[in-house]
Length: 471
Image (cartoon, rainbow, N blue to C red; front, top):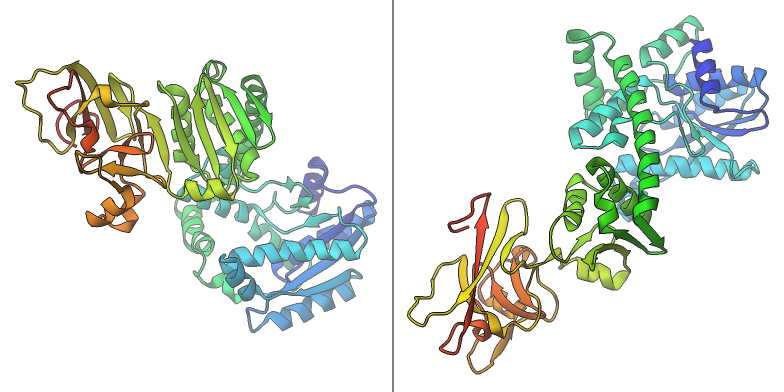
């Protein structure tokens, strides 16, 4: 196994002579194996190595594990650092899970040690193996992910290296048994508190016992291929992004015509790249966000949507602008979910399930005005600006009396006893800040049909894929 790991380290250019490495050593089987391998590797390729043990103080055995690891490093002649952290306090202050807090604090500890060693840009070695990779792939797959998530754990990410990623947990345990090397057993690994432990204890063992004994290694091989495909697609997406868009600080501007000439899959990869660049992260960016953003390019008319990380996308004059906003735009994004210019006459899609049909026709005084909840007539000549479908904004109002008396939209929704949670999702038809129609509710007095009306704008909101009927 040692030769297999050495070859993997060299193939992925993990270590060079003169490097400084901080290795995360918990005292468990994987990390003890990592330390042994690195010490053997150091005999061939000279580099500085320190073992970093992070004590989160969450388990009764934590002090024993720290003492075990320190004694092991003394016997193996390796520098030892023990960093104590308060995971529960960090999790509470930063509103994250204990698991995420522990991970963050571990990497901060590694960086602290490298600073003390005078090598702030040194490398960090961690003991992930093939089983960890399989758990990660399945976790991402079940939660929903793209190619990057299915690529699993990378052997090298920035300055983090994972020398044991090519071997499985059983291989590691057999290796340690052959070498008569002892290690600590973390009893929390036997609990099902975390989702990953459930995958580790139930799903993977069942897959190996009942489906394929090589399931873990097969998942690893597949994740490697996906990682290579993902890198290839990312390179092509970056080249396509350079062809189709320009970047200026907090804004990326796409030329719609150039964008639509690219393959559809590549288009979506470009959008992911663009969001990631403006946000500084792709965490919490879901397929639904990319799909809605993609629709800005493929539908007629102008529009606007709000995305995570205070990113707003506008379509206007043949361009789509992705803009990363500040605090003011963050407040607006909390209420403005989306905006779409109404196609008159024609069909405008609001969501996959809701569309709006518009038609124009001369008004005949003898015609009866429909009294349907989701079909309304409006005096077309009274419309000042382009009509848009959107959710509410600060300053919206609706005219409630023929003499011009108005009410704020907020007051109207409260009076109508619309639940607070639903107010931000209520679909509106707006002419600037004047609400023409609270869809499903009343229309503004200003736009109602009267004896002077010449042209009628009929607007019908429909659900599903049908072209008629009430929503």
